[in-house]
Image (cartoon, rainbow, N blue to C red; front, side):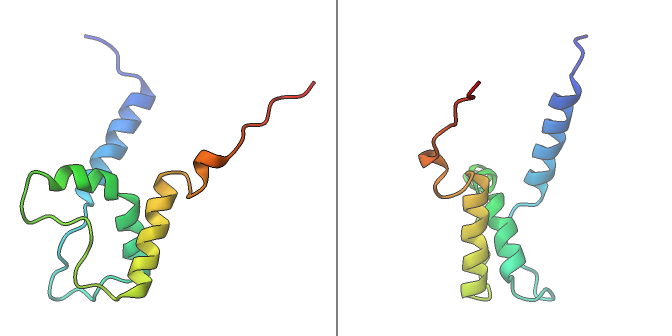
Length: 97
């Protein structure tokens, strides 16, 4: 039996945790999602999108939500997952010796 490295085990655990926290319709007793849930839903959006391709009742965007604050958090979460809006435009510094 092959040994599983600690990093692989940690990555798999993190992936399973993120999958278990996918965005969906809030329960009737829960308040409408605001900034913090928008931030979380934006961060896990790529994983949630892949999962949402299979069941019909899963959404990547919570509805109803609190409006602009949820949207703002969602956009920050999406950009945080991808490394920021301008991540592709950063020039890498070469080590100078």
